Image (cartoon, rainbow, N blue to C red):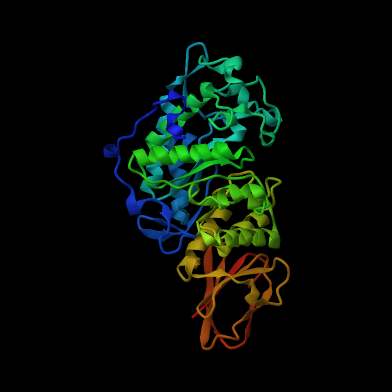
Length: 466
C-alpha cells in the first residue's frame, strides 16, 4: 500500500522543480566504504555533542553560539528531536493555540516552524549534519509525573479536532512508554488504522519535510529508543522516502531500538532490512560498559558485513551528574565506538551525558588530531594484536604494517605485536582530556612486540605509524 494514499490525505505536494536534486552532495553512505558517511562528495567522520536534544527550540542567538562552539572544537553532528514538551520554559508547540487555550491541529504555530527552519539553515551553513528523530515516545506520556501528555496538543482535551471517543486516546498515560499503551504509536493502516489521528500525524511530517527536504545534510530516525511495533517505524520510513522521491530527493532513514543488547531480535528489524533502513543507530549500546560494550558493537558490525552501512551512536551516555554511567564511562564509550568503526558518535545532553562540555570538546578535538595522522576508515578493530592487556585497559584499531591506534582508558602498559612487520615506526601521543598532541614522535622498531606505556593514568591515544 502506498503510505501517501491512506486516509484520503493529500497533504503538502513537493514539486521537484522547486527543490534542487541532492545527488552526490547529500549525506549518504560513502561510495568507497559504506561503513562511513560522505557529504558533498567527500568521506566524513561525524562527531559531536550538544547541550539539548531539540536544539531547534532554542532562541536563535543561543543556538548559533552552541553551533559555533561545536564547529570550533571540530564537531559536525547534532541530534534534533522534534519534541515540544514545554517543560523547560522556552519550548513552543507546532500547532496554533486559540483564544480559549486549545490547539487547532489544522493550523500551525509559525514560531515553531521558524525555529526549525533557522536550525536547518544554520547547521547547513556550518556543514553540521543533523539527525532528526521524528517521534519520541516520551513526548506523549505522563511517566514519572512528567505530565507531558497533559500539555500535549494531540491530547483531545487540548484540541478542537477530536474527542477521546473519536481518537481512542485516554486522559492519562502514567506508565513507562516502553509498555506501549499509548495508541498514538498504533495509528497506521497495518496497525489500528486510526484515520482520525493519522491524518494529523501525516500533516505534521509533511510540514517537517517541507522544511528539511530543502537541504542535503539531514538524516531521519523514526523514533527515540523505541520498543514499539515494527510496522509503525516502517510506515514512516516508507512515507518519508516517498515524499522525498516526489521532491526529487533521496534521504537516509533508520529506526532506533531500546534494547541494550544489539543481538536482540528487535534490532534485526533494521539490521536485516537495508532496502528500507540506510543506516543503523545503536545508541543504546551505550548503556553497556567495558569489554561488553566493545564486543556488542563489533558483533553488530559483523552481522551487518553482508550489507555494510553506517553505524551511528547519536547518544553517548555517561556523566558524573547522572546514573547512566560516570564521566569515565562516557569517554570510554565514545572512544571505543570511534575505534571500533562507528560512522557517527555524539555525546548525549546533560545531565545524562557530557553534552558540549569542555571535556566533550577536548575529545572532539582529539578525534580531529587523530584524523590528521590516521583516518579511522583506514583501520579496523584489532585487539588480538595487543599482549599483556588487562580487562578494559586498552583497545586497538589497526591497519597492520601501516598504522595502529591504541586507546588507553586509564593509562596502562600493553604490548603491540609488530613481529610480522619489518622496518621502523614512530609513536605519537594524544592527550584526550586536553585534546592535544603531547611530546615529540619517538621511534619504534618493527620485528618484535613493542611495549607501549601511557604517560599517565588517564585517557590517552597512542598512534604508531610508518
